[in-house]
Structures are given as C-alpha cells and as structure tokens.
Image (cartoon, rainbow, N blue to C red; front, side, top):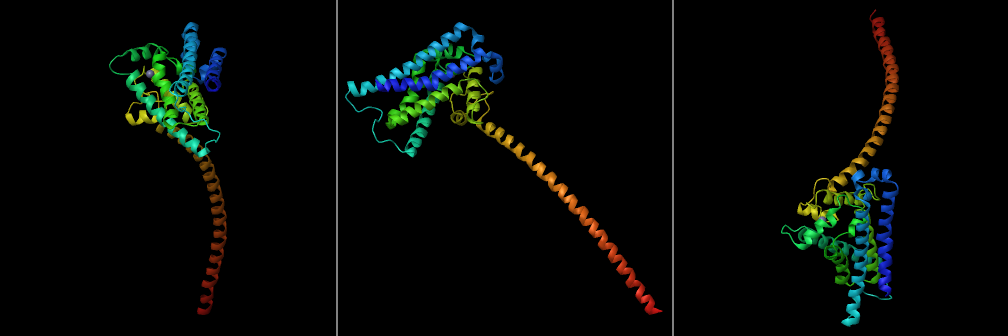
Length: 310
Ligand SMILES: [Zn+2]
C-alpha cells in the first residue's frame, strides 16, 4: 500500500498539480497566457469549450491514476500471486549518485525509444486500427496541447504509449525504489512542461524546443514529431514544420550568445580603435618634432662644407 501512496503522491505533486496550475493560469489570466503560448489565443483550454476542457482534465487524471494502480497491481502480482521477488528493488542500502545517474540515463533512452515507436507505428499506423482511430479522435481532437493533454487519450492508447515506456525500464533493470520514484517524478514534470504549449519555459534550449515540437505534432495532425526528445525524429526524418530541430535551437542559442559576444567585441574594438588613434596621433606629434629636429640638423650640416669650401 505504501508503494501506491508514494506513487500517487509523486504523480500528484509533479504532474497533476503543475498541470492544474498551468490550467488555472490560462483560465484566470487568458490575455497573459496568450502572450506565452506557442499557438496564442487558440491554445487557451477554455476556448474549445468548458465541457471539453472538463472532459480532458477528468480523463487525464483518470489515466494518471490508472497508471499508478496498474504499477501497484503489477508489483502485487509479482510478490503476492506469483510469489516472485518484487520488480523494483527495495533495500536499505541506497544506490550511489553515479548509479542513479546511469540508471536514469538508460531509463530515458528506453522510454524514448519505446514511446517513439509505439506512437509512430501503433497510434499513427498507416493501416487504420482501433488504437489509431481512438488516438486520433481522443488526443488529437485537441488542436493546441496544454499540460493535461499529455495523459488525455483513450485509456487503451495511453497504456502502451505512456505507461509501458515509463514502467518498462524500471522492470528491465530492476531499479532501486528510489531511482524508480525519481524517474517517475522527472517524467511527470516533463509531461506537464512539454505538453503545456508554453513557449516560455525554464532552460533555454531543452524545454521550449520540446514543447514547440510537441505543439507541431498536434498542428500537423500527427504527421511527425512522434518522440518527446528530438533525436529519434531527427534520425528517422520525421520532424515536421513548425518544430525547429535541435540544431536550429542550438544555432539560435549560439546566435544569441554570438550577438552578445559581437556586441562586447565591437565595444572592445571601438575602445581599441580610439586607443590606436590616440597612439598614432601622439606618435605623429613626436614624429613631427623628430623630423623637424633632423631637418634643422641637416641644414646645419649643409651649411658647414660651404663655409669650408670658401
Ligand atoms: Zn499522436
């Protein structure tokens, strides 16, 4: 039961509450939210109708809770029904920070690969199936995503595309419970931020780029940008217009820093030019004085032989 409570708390704190905050902000200050939403006014959830927004929130929270219940149920199935060891490691000795970092990295990689392929080939399969039709009429009925849309889908679509990719790495590597909870928290926060539709997000490259690409997945009606992280779309050539790729994001960022560097460089150059001009001026003055002195010396020399010659 404690596992259920811990997971529920993590999903509530890192996904449901931030999503509610985003929704409240968009509803209470629509004019402010329009300015920071990638799709402007059409991205305000209530614009699509209050009933629709309420349905999205209800289904999204239901799916998030369904994920928590399924994960707890699977754990109980292992330990209580099959009398096997638990899928998640629960020991008093904590993993090292390096061990946690390594596990999290593998978890994000596996989760990303699974989500991309299930989303692309099952939910957007070329041959129509129940799942692709449900994904299209449920999640893709929303034109502009907002945080709750991350888990808004037909539950039968949500389980393979979101729940399985998030839970599979923990089972596969038999994560320590601490790593498992940390990963759930990070994925929850990622979902809330990436689907928020906000173009102004923390971190200059990562989150705004991910949110813009997710936004483009919806505006293109699922023609591309199937992954949350850009790498697989980039390698598979499935990036769609409206979602600049990571090279553009890094380019923009470098451009910004480059502009700042160029500006400070220009100031330095300006200073250098002024200093150089000053030096040249003073050099010219001393040069003038020197040349006048040597002229006078020359004149004196020329006058001496004429005297001698006389
Ligand atoms: Zn889709």
